[in-house]
Image 1 (cartoon, rainbow, N blue to C red):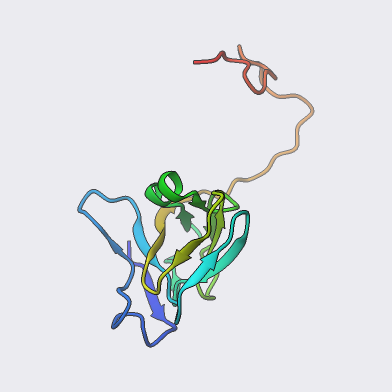
Image 2 (image 1 turned 90 degrees about the horizontal axis):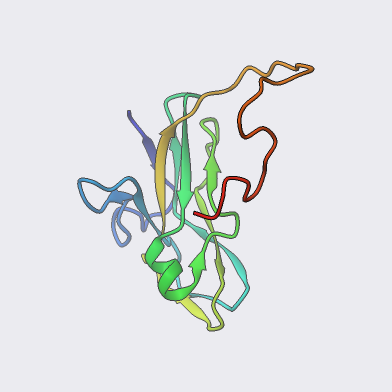
Length: 150
């Protein structure tokens, strides 16, 4: 699968590395803050952090997803306010990482800091059929917590 990447900042690829997999087994590419100066996120604040590039996925059977970095979340309380960012195959604008600070302390992002990860996954667009009844299952309409605690 080929991911085409268009740099939008002269810093990308020189001062700030391109998105890359940290290890051979990494599912996500590190996204870095493509900013000119440090950016402080105050407690409960939400910010938009530019990644400095746009992408082109090969077709509607692919999407890119922005996930939080687990280390930032558990160590500093920095995560995504929307849990997962979805980048559709036809989007050609700059990749922006939305971040929020769940901690009680200010957190400062430096230019080039790893702030999120980008995962490319296949998707299927469903054909919706409106029906009067759905097939029966053992669970039925049991919702939150209906299958037990463990």
